[in-house]
Image 1: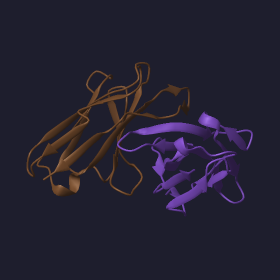
Image 2: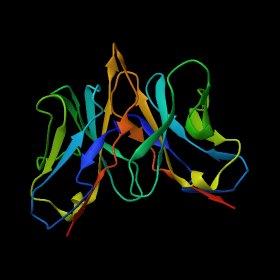
Image 3: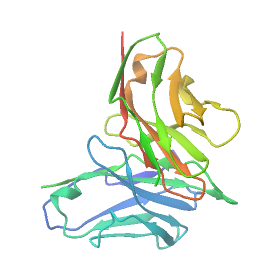
Image 4: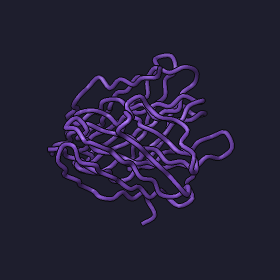
Length: 116
Length: 113
């Protein structure tokens, strides 16, 4: 399977702990996106990378959140000092850019975070 | 700012009947429009997209969607529903200069025997 993969699939943590999620995009895709989905809502954009450069961040991405894509391949999303409001599904997507056109975003299975 | 409205939280349809899931959007300029489907505890699976050209777009699993610029709508349709189509469906929009997708709140489709 050459789709987007995410690890772990589920994470339960206590409030105040730090967590880190990993996303591996489709191999030829140069763009990588992070979204957050809470119950009963559609996914909300957090940030995206083109290769290793983080080009846009949402205001939803507080100072406790940091994302990296150090070699332009996989990405990590870290949440420091987790709060119960951080409980959500964290989705990763990837796409490729052809000229000025950015192709379809393909999503991974998500990481479900529960903060107790 | 771009936005998407899915006016129905749930749509119920009998197997074999046609289905429609509604979506309207707001965006500056011409839009890119997408439909995704989500099964329980899974990520989003791409169904189809409108970029330009023919207003009727055909996608995976027999789904199609009709782009209507005057009504700013992009309704998802299927001529004959299957029980296995039961899932959560999301409409999304992206403006041509942007990169992020803006999603609606989703419509739960339930297909019954």
